[in-house]
Amino acid sequence: MPGAFEGETVTRRRFMNIGGQAAGGVAAASFLLPALGFALGPIFKSTPHRWETVGTIDDFLDSNYIPTVITLTPGIGEAGKTTVYVRKRNPAIDTDPPDRDTQFIAISSRCAHLGCPVRWVNAAERFICPCHGGVYDLLGRRVGGPPVRPLDRFYTRVEDGLYVQIGPRYSVNSELERFSPRDPGEPIDGIGQYLYPSRPSAQKL
Ligand code: FES
Image 1 (cartoon, rainbow, N blue to C red):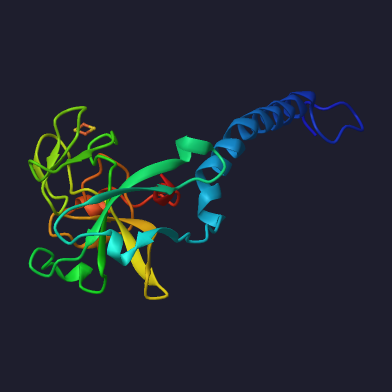
Image 2: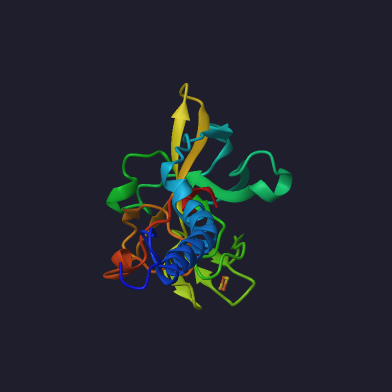
């Protein structure tokens, strides 16, 4: 072999090249594999849907929201809880098709701009965000400020004919059509639904 001493099957230059490339590959993998694990791990982790009872059917009105608190992430105390505004479905107000199969409306308090907690102001019949002036109407649709879509909602169901339960989160577009949960700041009208696909773990936040 040219450049090799007698009896050698590989030159020292080639041996050093291969050794250097192998060391580089190991170094790169030590950075890339953990990052890939964090990014792709949630896809393979099945999270069972939790349903949480927030009261009985008589605890809620069809004309006003009652704030309730549910646990999104168990085991981390208050940090894992969130406020959900709940009312009975009112056929005179809730004329949109997606919610015809539910008896209760549950609106997320997480602002669709950057995630600050919004508050229902009864006198104004508006959800108002204190951070940048986001304003939403009775159905959670944006009527002012920078939010890019309506407030998220939660699935609801009535258990044993009496108990109101809150289930998984979902997002809605400006027509209040259901979409898998998105993060704050992600519009889902038009092409936005393709530009901002749902993260596997977005529902828990
Ligand atoms: S976070 Fe609500 S308006 Fe900015």
